[in-house]
Amino acid sequence: MFLGAGLWRGARVCDGGGMRRIFLGLSAVLAATLVAGPAEDMARIHVEAIGGPARIAALGAVKATGRVTTGGKTVRFHMIAARPNQVRLETAGGGRTLVQTYDGKNPPWEIDTASMLPVARLMREGAAARFMGDAEFDDPLIESEARGYQLDVAGEALVDERRVAKVLVTRNGGTPFFLLVDLETFFVVQRIDPRRQSSGRNADVVTRFDRFRPVDGVLLPHLIEVSLDGRVVQTTAIELMEANPKLDAAVFRRPESAEEKKDRDEKPRSKGFWNFLKKES
Image 1 (cartoon, rainbow, N blue to C red):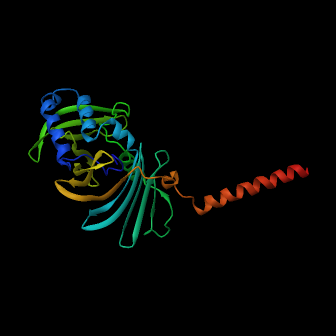
Image 2: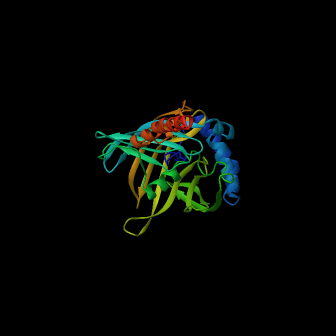
Image 3: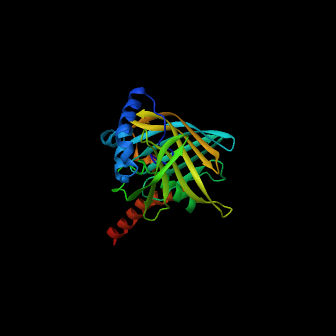
């Protein structure tokens, strides 16, 4: 997302006049040098703008609820995300519940109650790769070098009549993408991902972020819109976000199948039986 599952990515408006005045003062001093300066400077200012290193580090997990609208249908969602890249996403609507989870190590899995056998199954390869990519808790401008990201400023653009810097983000083994950083607030306002469509043509998937609200001192977007060919195809509205909820590691773990549970229960009995035979012999 950055900040999990592609659900959290920067925005243009922040709640709170005091915070906004700080950003305006900051931009007045630094905007002239950032476009021509290194991308690392922009990343550093971005970190300060959304809350600062200490507050970001202290926010290690979030629990969020809200609504996702796509294809004219709206479903409820519940999401738990934790640093560095653990996420559990549950969507429910029309009597159907879909659970998708990644524990940061093992392949992502899902349970779909609409399937004939609603048991935990591994995601398909393409879906799993996207889910793992979106599971990162922090955006790429946070500790980018330590996390293997390379940042390059690729000029300026206008988005909704506001100046933004285009930051090219690359990482070994991943597809490059752009982040657009507002030069007034230093928030990430958009992410642009090149995607190959099922028709075979290439198109940009644009993710827009808005409605920043503080979560334990860190400003996070509460509205995310995904567009394709200039048309909004998905809207995520976050209604509530809880900071640092108490988490059990099992929430990200794939549940055992009936066969796995049977094998686990039988192993101790089998071991005890062979130990008995050794003693008798």
